[in-house]
Amino acid sequence: METRKARQTLAEIEARHHDIIKLEKSIRELHDMFMDYSRRLVESQGEMVDRIEYHDKNASAYIDTATQETRRAVRYQSKARKKRVFILICVAVLAVLLVIIIGSWVGLS
Image (tube, helix red, strand yellow):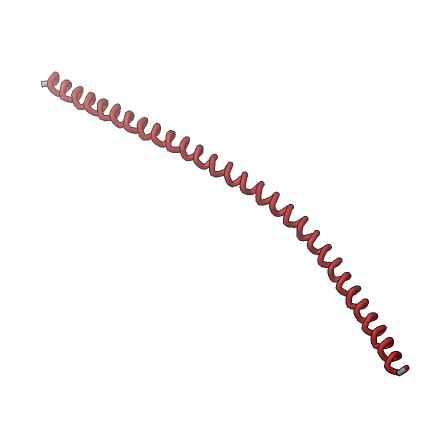
């Protein structure tokens, strides 16, 4: 009787041990899956970070170029404004001279 109980207990312990080994194997497989997923995630995010860094550098270069071109445009605009004022003054002086010449020519007749 005791031998039978001992064998039954041994069988139960062996079954539990077998179940624990299966559980351990499943946990290892799950761990491997997570590790593989994390490696893939890091690789894909690494590529994404590289692309973001590349676009950031390009944007910085474009901003620097745009800043220089804006400064140049402001200088050109200032020069153009000065030229317009100079031309308007010249036209006004010519108009006054024409009025004087025409006035004196009409007054002489």
